[in-house]
Length: 256
Image (cartoon, rainbow, N blue to C red):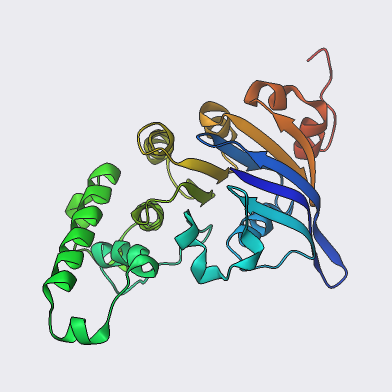
């Protein structure tokens, strides 16, 4: 579904990502892991078109993503959450979710001003979709709560819910359980699995919680200093001595 071909990203003299080659299969949960500064979020920012790769290509369902601008990416079927939640703090949970549909709504200012039936119908449908997302996230009782009043874990849920609103075929989740407790992490892990199994989404995940990654991922790629150093099934990656060295700074004793 998503392919990176020798993608390189340089900032002045720094190479953040170096000749990355990845293939993300449709209908999978594909995790990118690695130490801080490995280049993981840079990869997401290239898919979202916030960054322009210096070299290489990114293809989504065979289409060149690099020809699109950031606001056009959701129209192609790609949505994302953010490592640091980017919500409208003074708005309610419901209104934040509704902004997730904004790029997909084709509206005419005159029709809006005159309250045309088509406008009213679109608004009802959008609110119905938001209600369903909140039900899935189990936050329906927070619909009219101002986002800035919510604990951080719930703000992360709203951020993910906003991405879900567009019904993307590919959803990018950047450290979704950061700052969550064990119970919240378990709940969100179940949600991510449901995105694949029940909602038909392909998930590209960045996460530092290794127990969660190993539990829910179908495939894992490991990055370090901007390069892919390993790739495979969770059990295979977990045993890879190069991965252990990248995380711990030393190769694990084979007899341990």
